[in-house]
Image (tube, rainbow, N blue to C red; front, top):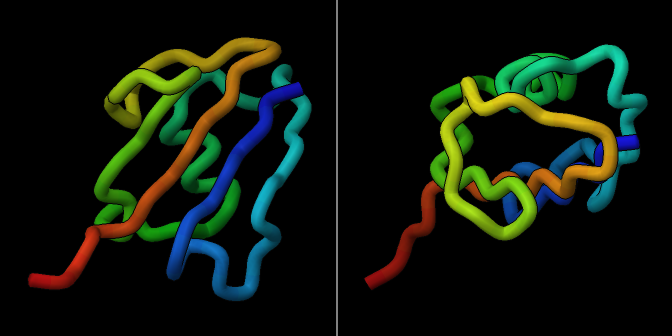
Length: 73
């Protein structure tokens, strides 16, 4: 299983935490597309606490955290 944690606006219409079977996904991009999140809406991507790119491979047991662009001043 891959645990996907969604933050802020990415939670709208979705669960806070999504558990996915690892067999169906080879990269973080596959997960983002599966969750129907437009690529431009993901600003920060962490896998197991480390900054990664959408093309990073994912494997069973990974924790993927997705954050939208952060606003404020």
